[in-house]
Image 1 (tube, rainbow, N blue to C red):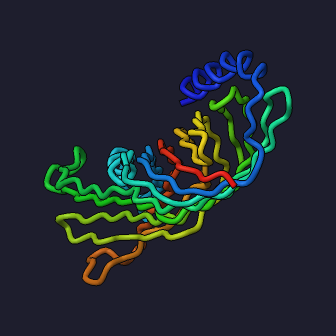
Image 2: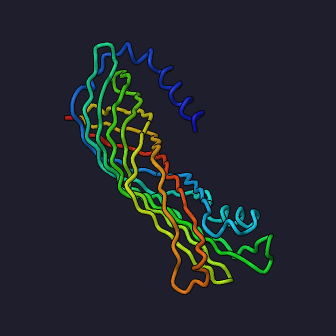
Image 3: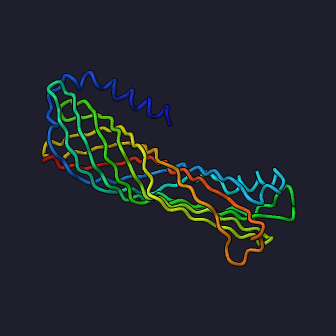
Length: 253
């Protein structure tokens, strides 16, 4: 991911010299809407506690790994934005933007039954899911304009509503599940290219990467579980970082 960011940033800076010599005018307020695609490499990390300490390390490792898949969540993205740009005579542009997006980034994965190496007669089914919903972001923007063309970098604050699920069921009637729901905050960075059609409308293509807090939650026993005492515990830490690739149509006032 860092390599991708470096390459995109380098391309924008290489384009800057020609942009700095331009006299286009991107100063003013704008508003519009956007749509695109979002993806999340949602890694999970599960820590076992309680009575799990009495089990073999091999079994603990198998269960922790089963509850910690890397979910490849994806889905549609759409929303609205409003912002302001100020262009200097050199072609240098500073701006700020507030945007809201509806995210459809999610994945549900069920695996199993998976026999354990420690006890071949024992098997587990695992369930994991993540869903990213409403997103709000406030970013600063720095760019270079060349007539109808504007390239820019952005960085700022982002928050997203996230939900995650983890569950485990064994053929020995061990039944556990947990759900976490939280509004996560973090930083969003991006790169963009925007073209002005000359009639107050402009079209922007942009890539954004959001680095947000993790979602943490514990599993609980489900009704009918045979193993409630001594208590076994599973604590899940679910990553929710995501990236979006989108087009934004803006009306410049």
